[in-house]
Image (cartoon, rainbow, N blue to C red; front, side, top):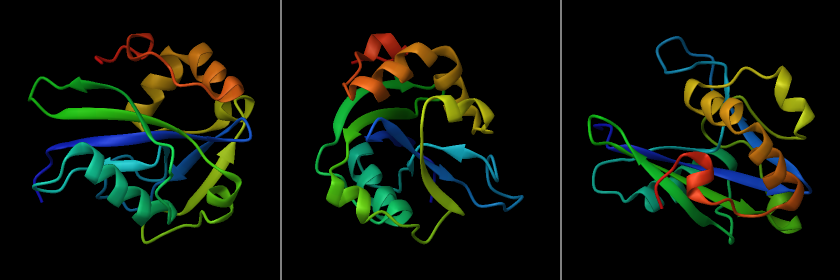
Length: 151
């Protein structure tokens, strides 16, 4: 399917962030690196529909609390959307690896420093470390402009 854009989710539970370890396959982008759950749109999907599909495929749940944070539009007119959600205890218990990826796991803010991230997520975490930490600790939705996104 042609790449139309993508959507990712910052999912928090118990002051930890959920990350997804990509497959270690040489012909995929950023193999064997950690990323936020989410992914690319398929033809005809909205960003939100793609996120729901990708979450079901990657972590086996679609969180009840998913909030749009903001978006970027690339120079080639592809839209990237970021969402934020707080997981319930029940949702956290039902998470398990789906048909893609090697591992899914919750990390504290301090554990993030030792991980290898995909290029897109590394930029967000490196440029906005303080804000990411605040989001995890307070479990609050950030403002789009604080992450360099458009509302």
